[in-house]
Length: 97
Image (cartoon, rainbow, N blue to C red; front, side, top):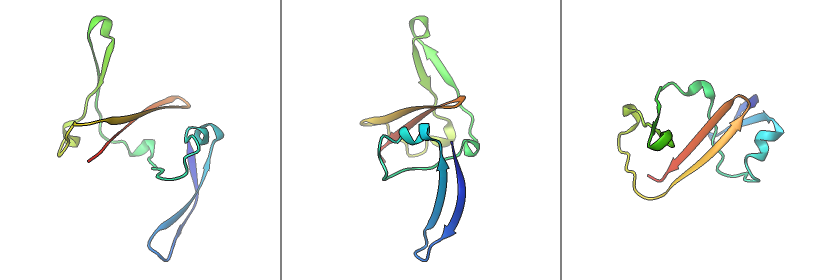
């Protein structure tokens, strides 16, 4: 989990944000310092479910809520990352448009 220490407006229309992040979370970046995305646990406001199918419910599915399905084409590869941070477990999926 990171905390915002300061926010400053730049002249080029961008915003400079200074973060304080735990060492464990920094390691999760695996040395990548470009194309970092930020999100907050509190900003997730759409509720969905996880469903299980198959023998002994071995197959798990994340259901995509109807509000998020517009213009969604599920062709090609989907990249996924699992993050365990504190008491939370995050699954982040990335699809190409």
